[in-house]
Length: 135
Image 1 (tube, rainbow, N blue to C red):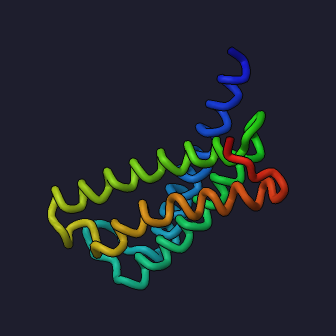
Image 2: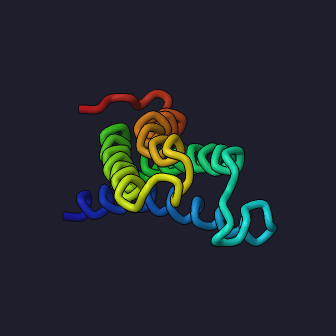
């Protein structure tokens, strides 16, 4: 039972690293006035900035998951990437359900699930450059 808890903890930690860092960065950007206060709209370049730092934080989440995995770090990273993909796709569904334009540009909503898999796996590869087995 313990290895299962350690494995789950590794994946949960990777998800938390990504989510908490992204949320904190958003708060900092709003706090310093880089991102406008609601209900003002952000520009495309600000969405590009947000997408860029989210990609970096997603790499960090993959790194954390692979480092904490008790074995098969890439398998753990794939699980995290799948969770990120599903969460990102839910965001795309919400984007279109609420109405495009109210949540920013479509490319931004789509970029989140698109970057999930490669960024997480890149982070895992950085964490374990010699341990790449998925089996």
